[in-house]
Length: 218
Image (tube, rainbow, N blue to C red; front, side, top):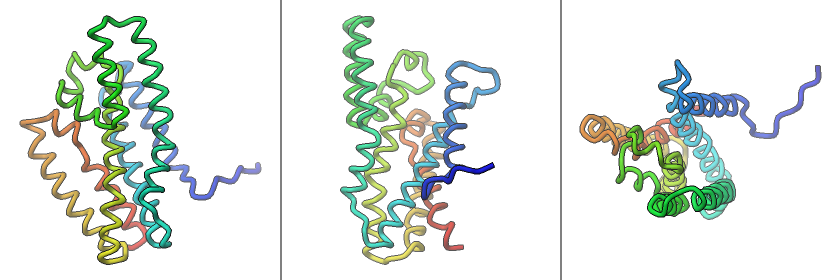
């Protein structure tokens, strides 16, 4: 049987991880037995982003063609249209079914989602697993905000390191240092401030960015 060739650079294994992550999150939210920890699918997406975005940045730096603005533009085109469409749809729906106070809250959450700071907004309001959070239509955008903040910082960090000392090994050292610091903060905060540790969890990106860098060295 003839197989259809994959587009250049397409990773079937990564695409499969995306599918499993989505399924796990959906089944968790529907309360399917055995998927009480399905929210870990969000972490899987963090892993994928750290892996893929680091590859894009490093490849561009090695070829001398990387542009921070072009990187941001590509991410904006991929994320913002769908996010704006979702927020617009929910605001129209909310206008019809929500009370004025609840609609005001929804509008505030939509603004924070579009600004990619919703993780800070929800962190300030309540914990992700609190009962009150179940009524927040845009609660899921907290992870998108974390992801976007990672997109903003990653190319700046890697570009700066590359200018100081080109090569993949220095990048690994810097990301390893970031991982140790962020992991230490996460461990220290989890017991006393679990909501803070949850909504500001950048450590997964850093860990798997290192994986992407090191796979072609060792």
